[in-house]
Length: 229
Length: 238
Image (cartoon, rainbow over all chains, first blue to last red):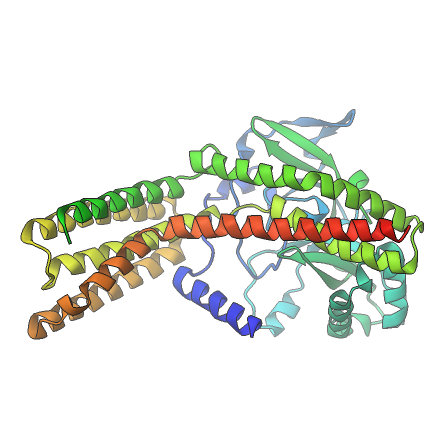
């Protein structure tokens, strides 16, 4: 009943308001070499409040470490799916290419075929995920759940178990392909945990630091240290 | 409707204009944006103590200091903690609110024009006032739309939608007015219609108040559940 009500509300909102509008033109982002990453569903638009990226400093400090921004790929986070893991919408991520062992925040290229199959139009090329572990070859659902439980106890909850089971089944196209390694990650929808399975080869970058505008200065968060799992 | 009521109605319209424009031009330095940020900061402060307690328990759980039953309690706590963090860290949908103001304004104004044009029981001067002010509001709404067009951002889809909605609403209005002139039907449901129009005019405020109240309730609930679980965990001696 609640689901039907939610669907009616969502449908009404979409019909009346259309897609979420955006406050700023983001042409300035491209000129700064900043790409956008979806923290949430990459087929949905999200709105954010503009931070002034035109006055980005060339260097920032993070706990005694000097970071030169030009040495990193920069991504603007759009969406609130990583808020429970400390990355907010509007944060600027400083990233290195490929999967880095020091960070669990992965910038994953969106699998276009997957969204084509679901008949969804993509709004983003990248999505942000918090990686948990890599799936071993022919690892069963139970074994994988057991390993996840050792990382953190979230999987002990019935709703998470159910979501994990559903996602594991949905990821068969990746898991059955012996050429592809798959990783399990987590994301949050309205603050509720959702598991996600993605191939390792789709990890384009790893986020090492997050820059957050605090009035007229930038707060730099070390994601390598603050990673909880 | 008495003269005083009519003036109140006009005051509502003026409030709406202020709300629309303020909401639309909201940015990080906007007064309402600052106020909303303060609200989020307050939520954050309310939550910080509980979050610290939960974080301490979680670290112990991950080090294996708690029983299997305790780990399940920790999992439940983590669920509430994630929810609290989401409630205190999400970015408000300013765009959604500003669009809400815009739509509310357009619908509300069309409703008022309808009151002015039809065979309502209001006297001539009151109807004149309503019509004049409704037109001013409408003009301001169009200025907002022009600004949206000038931005040339991803608003464009919404603009098409706005134009379609406004055109549709004007056609519907014309039909109702035609129906009323033919059958003199309007005065029978005038008062509910005025109330309905005012409610639409106030929609941005109503939504904001409901949103804030709902956020506070959600936070209170999650904090309470989290604290209860924390006590339960410690009463079990972990």
